[in-house]
Image 1 (tube, helix red, strand yellow):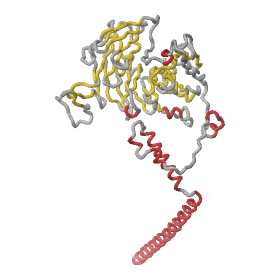
Image 2 (spheres, helix red, strand yellow; image 1 turned 30 degrees about the vertical axis):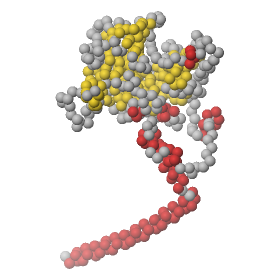
Image 3 (spheres, helix red, strand yellow; image 1 turned 90 degrees about the horizontal axis):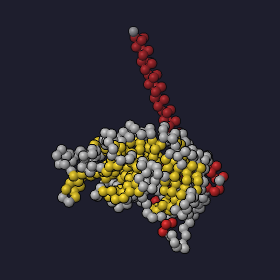
Image 4 (spheres, one colour; image 1 turned 45 degrees about the vertical axis):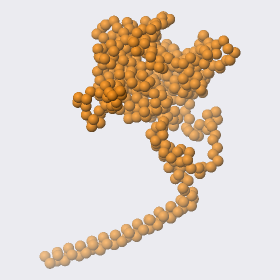
Length: 459
C-alpha cells in the first residue's frame, strides 16, 4: 500500500494505491468513491510499493528483485533494473526524495540516487547503488528513514537475524547494531529520533509478540568514559544530568526484555505486521495477523482501543491528516479527484538529446536572453554551506560553473589560432634544444672512442 499526497498539500492524502498480490495490477482508491477509482496495469506482479513524499514518482519491487519506477503525472516508465537477487520486501524514499532505499530477502539494503535512476543516458546494466549495506545475515523486514535532508538523515533497518541497524546516510557507515532476543518484523521511528519501536516474534516459544521501545539517549556513566576517544558517544547536559547518545562508531547494543529501555515491551498474541506512531508521539498503533488494530498510549503503555473490522491479516498501517475530500462532505464545494495516467509497460529508449527532441510532448524550450550572466550571482557565493544541498549536487554545479567560465573566456577562432602559434613556437624551441643536446652527446662519444683507441695502441 502507498499513499499519494494531495496536490499542493504533501501532508494530506489524495489517493491510496494498493498492489494486488496475485495479479500485475495496482488498485487506486479515492475518498469520494466506494468502488475502485482506477486500475493500473503493471508489467509484473509487485510485492512492494512506495510513492515519493512529493507525489511525483512511484516505485514497485518484484519477487525476482526488479524495481520499476514510474512518473505519476505521465505514467512514463522511467527505469526498470535488477536491484537485488531475491524478493524485494520493502521500498522507502528518503524524506527529501533524493534517494530510494530497497531491502530484500538477499539480506542486502541498497541506496539508489533518484538522479541516477531518472538519468536516461544511464543503461539498465550500468546503474549501481550509491550505498550497498550487507551487514545483515537474514532477509530485511523493514526500513525507516529519519526526517531531514539526505546528508543529515539516518536510516534504521530490521532483519530476521534479530538485529536492527542504524546507518548514516552522509557517509554510509554503520552507527549502531541493536541485538534483540527475537526476530524483528517492523519498525517505527520517533520523528525527533530520540527512540524507536521494534516489533518482533515471541520469545522462547511464548504466546506474546513484543513491541520494544529502544531509547537512543541515556544518562552518561562517568566510569570508563574517554572524552578523547573519537568513537565516544556525544553527550550533553540536561537538567544537570549528562545525557549521551547510545552507540555510535559501529557499536553493538543488546536489547533485553528486562532492560529499562524496553520498559517490558507491549505484548500481543498474534504476529505483528505493522506499527505506526502518531504525529505528537503519544499514540502507537499496531496491526496483527488476526486482523486487529490496537491503539496504545505510549506514556502509560495501556491499550486504549481495538479495531476489529478486518477479516484477514492487516498488512499495512498509515497515520495521516484528514483528507481534504472528507472536509467538504455536505457542502457545495467539490474537490477534484487527482488522476494518475496509465502506467507504461515498456521503457522508452531515447538517446538524449537527438531522439528525445523527436517527441515534442517531452520537450520544454527555454530561451535565454544572454549567456554572459554571472553564474555566481544566480547560484550564490557559498552554496556548499547552504542547507539542503547535497555534496554531489554541489560538485556538479561547480563543474558546470567552471565549464561555463572556460567557454566564456575563449574567443573562438582567434583563441584557437593563438594557441596553435604558441604550440608551434614551443615545438621549435624543443627541436633546437634537442639538436644542442645531440651535438654535445656526439662530441662526448667521439672523445671517449679516441681516448680508448690511444690506450689500445700503447698496450
